[in-house]
Amino acid sequence: MYHSLASKEYDVNWLRVGSVLSVLGSLTWLLWPSANWRVEPEPALALLTALAIWISQEVADWRGLADRDAKAHPNDVELAKRFQVTFDSDVRRFLRDQSFGSVFRSDIMDRLYLVDANWSGVEYRFEDADLDNQLSELLRLNSDFCAKMATYSGPARGSANLISVPTDEERSRDKFSDHTLAHIKELQMLADQVLEAMEKLQKTIKKKIPQSFVDATWRYE
Image (tube, rainbow, N blue to C red):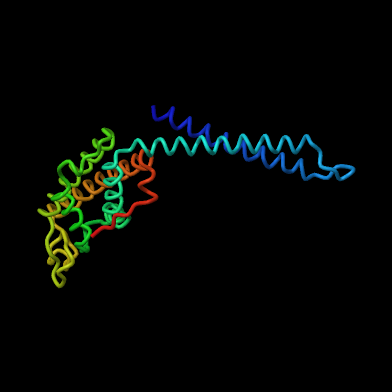
């Protein structure tokens, strides 16, 4: 199914390129001077035909996008917007780059803890079954990640805004115990799983509810 849709989009893109090239070729033919510097009817007719085909394709594509957007449930659109501003680039960067072997800021984890605590009920369910299944999987993985993080980490000495998996003593000695290393490895694995599920959902949203990427009005607070 995905392959057929991708092939269809690929064909549509090539049709658009062909239409634009036809317009440019016809325009070049029209503007190319003849021996007597007169405008010939053949290139003018070719240009008008190419323009008509190009415009009709653009209108058809626009109508197709409008129909797809109109089919999206209003709750799905709003939830897609909320998803994008909650799981933003800061969250992705944290999940992708944080090694959990050193201290890190608590604000991103606080955001993930809030998702784990609050994202439940019909308000946080997509009407679209595919989106809903992917969101449910993301929330399950995030819950596992948050539970392990709460168990394995604690405040770092000297700052209320920093947390750490290794203890202060382990960091000062730069030598971690086997169970601390195991905790770090497990958190890295869980973070990768959350990131993968998040990016998968984002790609599906972009495909099914593209308007949520254009006019998103939610702001994370």
